[in-house]
Image (cartoon, rainbow, N blue to C red; front, side, top):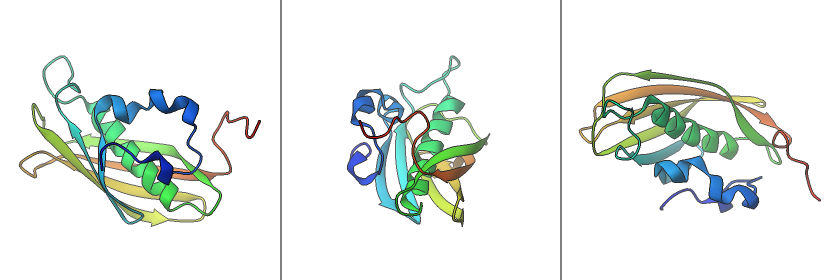
Length: 146
């Protein structure tokens, strides 16, 4: 799969489709289940001024996979939004593609927590992230049906 299949996510607003941050970073979701998501992101185009993969790009990759996992695990009719994200950057990446694997640590009625492990082309851990999401009735600021 290339990119993120928005048809699988509830509550996606088509009027914001051209503003989807993961598209701008080149994030692709390659495996998509409630218990395991895998995504990739190119290093090129996502660098900080010293030629290293930007830590914020790691955070976007982690939150993207974790948020999708949270939606897939949310109660029927609910959406999920990020509550807390932490990232520990273990090693610099200068080129290639990074791969993230997201697995649940906790799935509850209102909150869910995921571990996202990001590795480089040599399968070395470069970042470990943890995301907690909360299930809500609708997206903040969403006026609902017109």
